[in-house]
Image (cartoon, rainbow, N blue to C red; front, top):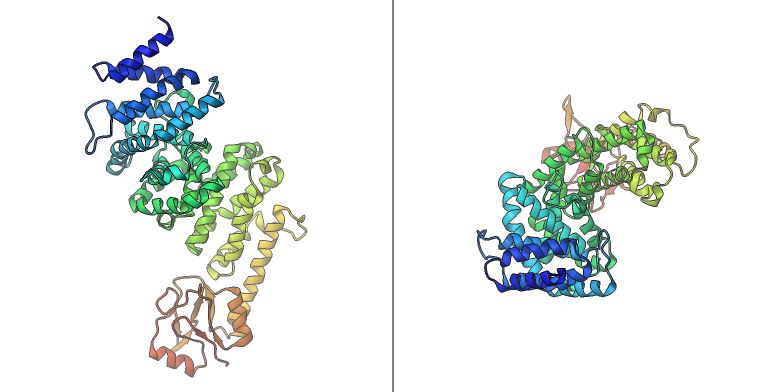
Length: 520
């Protein structure tokens, strides 16, 4: 009997609902995985009817094989949508498949949601890891949505009309962060990409296309805020520790992992703060240090795209953490060796041609150096930077750096540190007689010496405010972003006795966010 005749028999048997229909469906799935586009389009209606007629159970995990067969069908849908290998897809078949997927979109979401909630989430929150079956389900769902969104099949209209679809896709993509092992053996070799790679592909397609921005600008953030919990953050922080401590860094896995984390952390403050609590800044800096050591020993490694991606997304995550985490994050990264790693990486960027085809200098080192430069106004960051920038090789920087080179950025940073150090000394000890300290240290407090109050602290003031206080020496109103308050860190507690003593000695007096400088 011809192959076409076998297919027709299997189709009738699979749709009969009689004993043996599941076996016929399995054979059709196997044939669809290896068949050409014409045969796949021919058997796809069988898959549609199976998904439509067999609804996901309402409660509990069923004892039948139907959910696993639904998983096989979803896997086949992904294979049919994405042209791979030697299979010849023509435009008509693509249009037919796209229309079929759109028609079956609600059933695809229903079954995907059921499989995810019953085989992936229970494993993660019970054991903080995935079983073999849970890993297979997650891997196949990532492949399905990664391939669907790689083509113009599903748009914002379909997602808005399907309740829970956007939230499910974000959860599936984020849960890839807990996977640190290769794809299971049940996944064919041709599709055995890592989970984080499919997750990165989903975010590339959904967040990198202009017409998606209006939809995901709200839905993505809302989904993250709904399901990102301290426990989930603790799990992915453990994965980061595991990744950075491997004997040989897996650059492909780490780069995609950091891509997803930096994308989410820049939009979700809960995730950012929880990862900072678990010292993710330190471990990310450790990865950068290891990358810099590899490049310093072997400059050719800077031409490896996965190495460049690891470098780029680690910088992106650190830049986001600096923006939202403040000066504690900056000092932690600098004390963990960020400057030495940045020096090696910036020099490698100058000496290695070709990286401009993939990334910009701003993405690789300029942006994060700008963060360091901006934060150098404050005492704790300034002293931390000075302590490290005076060591080799940064202590040998000369002023005759070529314009536009990475070396010029370092010279500028060093000169700025020097000038701001002198400005701070001038303000604290010359202009204001040593009674006001400009500082970002949250442990700052008023100290007493022989019964006299010395060193009240002004925290996190901008350079403009600082200069304004020197010129006017009158009432100083800080900008709304200034964190001066009697209840904030770094500001002495308010008391009547302190106010009287300060005024009697012509010292600056602070009252609920207002700094008043009295002429001596």
